[in-house]
Length: 409
Image (cartoon, helix red, strand yellow):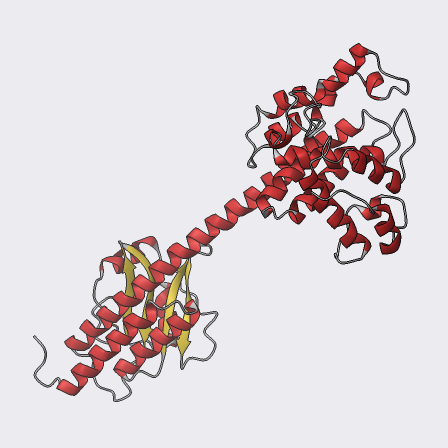
């Protein structure tokens, strides 16, 4: 029952304040700003001149001020409560009037001294699900009046609103902490994952003294070409990894065969040509976060006219990633020294690509590959990938001459 001297005007004011408080604490604003606004509303409702909201800091085991008014710097006013005191306050479901001695002040332990310095008159505990999240402390009314039963009820409702806000923020902070922990673990695993893949690539290239870095170049060329073809970031990352691992099957091939300078025997050819299948068998047992890596490895020596190996696939039966890799793998092989011949010039390599346009190489892959080279020569890209590795000086005029008469897809 409301006190008879409670005016309708005051009732409406307090109801309006409660509505504003509810709206404020559920807003997406900065949490610090929300808590300060909530404290100011509480103080304004009771004409208090000093107030502070404490929140439990689980890392330090103390209640620390998160908002204050009229008290200057209260940053050091930390309150430490015993488990017994915290448990008792959790069960105390109405504000405590320290002046009336409704709750023995001495049971507050260290908190009593701090609250005395803050000239606290009323304490309202912030409790959710039997957990003491913090408390509000305000001094007496500016008018000197006592706090009525209705005042205590109003303060209790306000504290409940603020409790829910603190609880939501606490859950969010815990979630963010877990997220950051998991993100850190993910990043560590990702680094280990990539380091392992790069180690595999290095071990593959180490078998061939003539092509050190081949896997890394194929990886880089595949990534820049697929990006030019409009692939998504995730798809580009997948073919980048496939490029690093495309020759992993060579670890099962005798090193003398890989580095042989004279023509290979039929047996040696079969051994060398088995590496895509061996690579597929190895990689198909790994659960990659990217699609198609085992098949790109298996089919990177297929030709669009069906004369490639190991499956003699034609045209679009060959995965698009394998068609990209078939071009850049051959291009890098042509433009680097091999056991059986020195590297070809860029012009000679382009003549080979032109001669095998639509036969070995997919026209729909060759055209964007040429576009990438044109852009790099014209310096239309910030970080060129292919041209800097060619050991040749190219300009737009000479490039246009080299590419004259190139078939159109």
